[in-house]
Length: 349
Image (cartoon, rainbow, N blue to C red):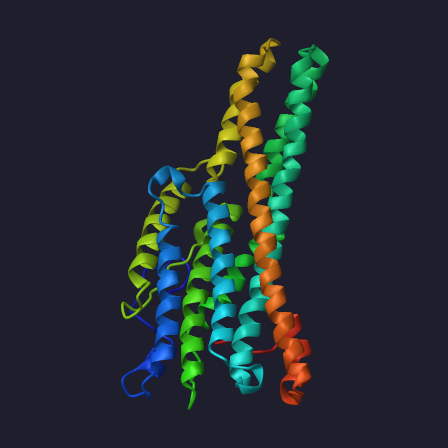
């Protein structure tokens, strides 16, 4: 796997994740092969839907909502696959548990960071509402208050969120562990690990796009190489190449922000400055800002709901797994689970 923002340097520098399903491995039964084929087919379709049809759709809050909604569907899909595999937790190897817990705890951290940024951006909406309220009165004193609120909004939006700044480190640690664990004597385990690989690739890339958009830097944007053996690889590479090229161009343009709806609000703010300074405003001139501010706020609310949904799916999966481990008396795993729950001192895949 390549490092964030780097071009690919060949497949699998950390090992081939598909050697466990190579021709040397025992053949999968027709049922297992069907389950894997269906899962990867659904994954391919879900990725295809995320490929923007137009450049203008890239890094919009509507795309972000769709992407997070898609992640929710994919992670629900892996839970369904585990059930369909009839692979009880009692049959899981410790390293499979590590895989699941490692992914989920770090994704929970990313969800918390994204939620904090969405909340912060929505807090800026209060400043806009206060400014628009004062502009409606059109009195000299209130115009001054309005300009001050608009200035505060711009300062608020460009301020840094430490939790977002930390996303790059979390993503990098996950990228370094993308290769699959070795699975011995378990055809079901091989299917599960390969399916989890696809889930992780999709999740990591989308999370990188979110982190880049929120941080205002391409440092968190990922370039992941995947094998063309995978039925979803072509669609993933199309999405990644399309998104990355345009996002990098956005950052090079030195825009106020790469989020389209946020940029529209800023444009509306800047257009009002001359009229505020002249002391004359009308409702027509304020309408574009009102519309763009409402669109941004509504969009952020929808993205927040999807992030919250994703968080709950991850948390539910962890809780179910840990509860099952307790019920079967998995003492070895339980001895380390407190550290895993805290996200410390354990290895992923």
